[in-house]
Amino acid sequence: MSVADDRMHFGAGAWGLIRRQVIDWRARAERDHQLVLDQIDEHGELSARRLFTSRFVDQVLRLVGTRHLVLGHTAWGQA
Image 1 (cartoon, rainbow, N blue to C red):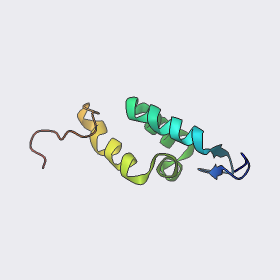
Image 2: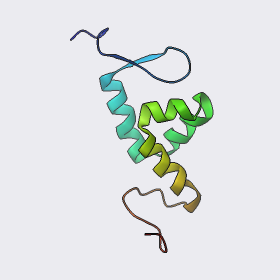
Image 3: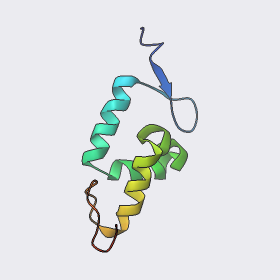
């Protein structure tokens, strides 16, 4: 598969990323959730959902107010 065939298009406009770049962005966002929030601020929520997955964006947005952005753990009182 050529690089051109491996292009993925995300966000506002037609900027494209190759699969390796998307995987890298997602791995970095798992360690630094601010990347998701920055993506939303700069390119909109739809772009963030396309790049990071809707499920991950939902997790970050749900946990952002708790200041405990450790995914995979729930805050006390939530089940």
